[in-house]
Length: 284
Figure 1 (cartoon, rainbow, N blue to C red):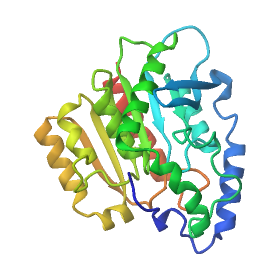
Figure 2: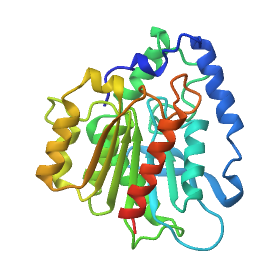
Figure 3: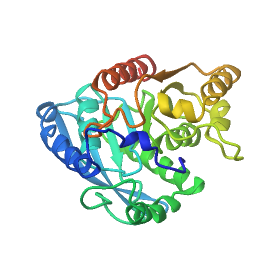
């Protein structure tokens, strides 16, 4: 998991930190109905080995079955902007689960009001929630979420499952592809936390044991902090014979999240198009 919050997610000389929080709320509210007409949305509970996770489930309206996808949010977990991502993906023909990965600590939304990344008190409130997401806990949760998706009558279990993650959700995506290698056929990360570390449980070390195709979309300021990571990942994918696209986007950490001052619509739409290509090619 990422160990710090990248300043790039909030830095914009024209937008104050308070405005960032207000923009996030406004953008999420405005986007609520964009895909609602052809999508069923449910708040659900997922039983895990450690308790009960609150989550949002989406699938296309009407009869049929579709491939399933798990979305790992960024470090503030389940909230309106990620609900909108779930709706949008479901409207493209997928059964989508967006869990609150901090369920051990509290239900979503996990932070009330605007969040100030520079405020140590704000960050301190999130720290213990993140600390509970140990490597072992993530693996248990990932297995439970995938099994929940497979238990849904709308899920086509003859097709592979996809998983995607943002910021700290990137390492969680790799963990899911590893622990549920029998089901995950596509994995995507966007402005991810560190995927290559010196730790014995570094996300990239599990690649050889997975069966997924990968899309790694890296922010340019993350690449500047970890310039060697893209090449290390490419080498790991080649060695493991896993198909992968590793690309540095001309955008800042957090560019895919609407409402963020660094939200980059052109780059976000490109990333979304690449995501759909990944799923269409590998979840059939």
